[in-house]
Amino acid sequence: IRYPSITVRTVFDGAAPQEVESQVSRPVEEALATLDGLVHLESRSRAGLSDVVLGFDWGTDMDGATQSIRENLQTTWLPEGTERPLI
Image (cartoon, rainbow, N blue to C red):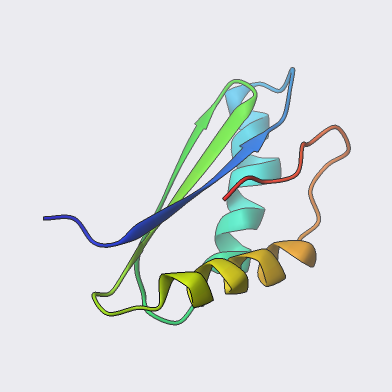
């Protein structure tokens, strides 16, 4: 059984995995770490791609969580050349 989850995928073409981790994955993690109902946060950084997986407690309003993610990402600085994060 897995917790209800949402993945935030961000493309940063041409960036090495270390750059993706430090310039994309970590800022996204920091912006989303305080969401209501969040029980698990994990990121995967690969060349040109960041996936941040958020696991929520049972009973969490996932539509509300998605809206909160969008709002938090609007105020998160990401480097030039980064595509808009996909939820």
